[in-house]
Image (cartoon, rainbow, N blue to C red):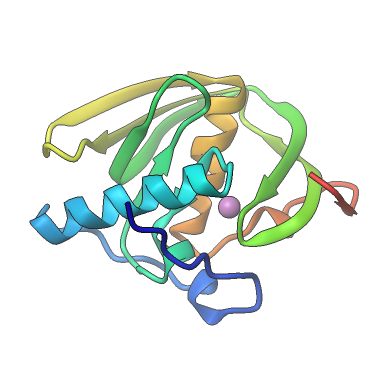
Amino acid sequence: MAIREIVKVGDDCLRKTCKPIDKITTRTKILVEDMLDTMYEANGCGLAGPQVGVLRRLCVIDVGEGPIVMINPVIVKSEGEQEGAEGCLSVPGKSGNGTRPATVTATALEITGEVQVYEAEGLFARCICHELDHLDGVLYIDKVTDGLTTGE
Ligand code: NI
């Protein structure tokens, strides 16, 4: 188990566009394991590469249905709208309401290199959108509709 330091808002790293992962190596696998450990340790439901200082297109998610690893994820379809509270491990102690699609279809590689298609709604859809935003240097605090509040 290796916990990595979570990059906090204000660090440039969170504002960069990430590059795709060309090849899944042992290093990628170690990174993914560390990211999962780090996310669980921090009680988060998602963590993206830049949040541990790695500017590559990958994230891990667990919305209570087990760990999901998304490498080079892409949202291929999104529909509807949902409003809800969001927080981020890189913005500790804050939360805010934001609008996200109600459902998203996303594709990504698993750690095995296999292509996986995800049909997501509710929290899972919100989480995918949030994590994918991280890969383009976007934070949820850029999108909150009624300001940030203190407390999760
Ligand atoms: Ni986040």
